[in-house]
Picture (cartoon, rainbow, N blue to C red):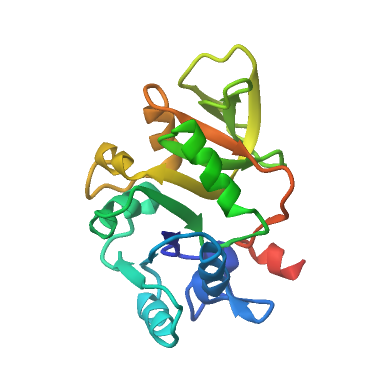
Length: 229
């Protein structure tokens, strides 16, 4: 599933007349970059959630043959955030065992198949791709097991601890994660919910594991400054 329903306010004025997903980067839309990246894995279908300029995304997807089914989960009436939007798309995943989740504004050279392999080896309920990078908000992991144990915001000094960790590691979330389908049963329907507080809550009982991505190039293209660079 590609999360493409954001308002794209940090990319204004590039998003004045189009959704963030259709902003161009090196000759391709961000959505095309994401779809092509997911097609390097054995995914059987792709779901794209929409809200801002939803009709433009529908037209873009319908304009070509992607070589794989690409479906729309329409959130035009009410934006549900990431976990809430994932829950709304639940009907698409009835035949799935695991679901790869990908933010549309991420450009990365990560080997997604290595992520999938580790996810299965760990039998994780959720495997989160994380990097050692500069960010004001970081996830906290138990260094030995890489189990999610907390979150910290250095700007607001807010800190949440959900599990004890003998030695902790603070890492930035990369907007790429892989989850068991059963995790959908833990998300309440028709509610606006972000993945970060959701993961912090379920990590008290379930394995939510960090996948430390040290080798790949990675860029969040969600801010206008990123395109200026």
